[in-house]
Image (cartoon, rainbow, N blue to C red; front, side, top):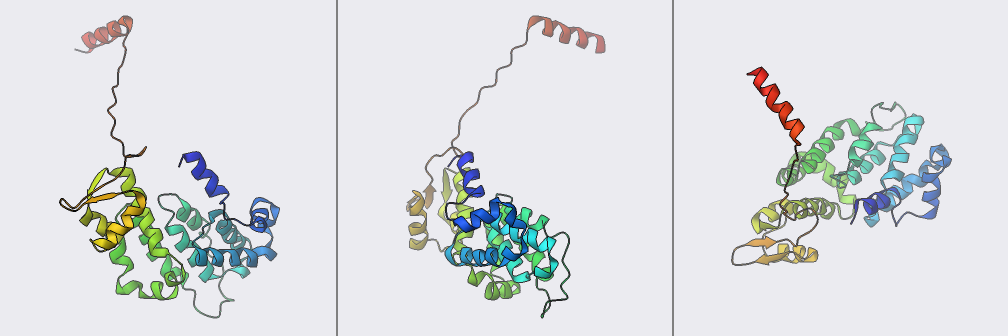
Length: 247
């Protein structure tokens, strides 16, 4: 997939309904009466494994302009969806709209966002740095039980979306990699389950050496580059003259 097609799918996902397109692309994106439509669309994304960053950013912008609309659960779900867009900057774009925290006096319960925001930021950093084993260790820790039970359990395919981040990183950096290492990146047991999973991407496992081969692509191809510089005689004379003076 080219950078142009990636950008186009980010700006206008193929799964975006016409109604949402009209809201996101027009002046109605700032109409507070449409926030419930955008929130419903977010929960559709959560249930269907779809993703529309611009529509979700529109919700956060409406919360900025209309603090009384603020719903912390919606914000948390937006951040969780944007986690798995790494290495793209969606998570940071969402965070940038949370700088001015809205007043939460209208909430019936304590706002969970201040407690969860550092955790989500840490998870994002681990994914962005390709520290996948550390991500899984933190995500599956007892400290994040509440996040799993109350939020990510509702996000269909969340763990598979995290694995797709790891797959993109491996495909970009390796032509050969051990199955044990890939197993730790994907949080899948090294064996038939892992082999079935990687076969979807055209990767092959040599059972004798436990090495996975990854087909060449534009990112992992190793190509030698010859750099040739041409220095004309007058330029060389100036260099020699300058060297002689300084010495």
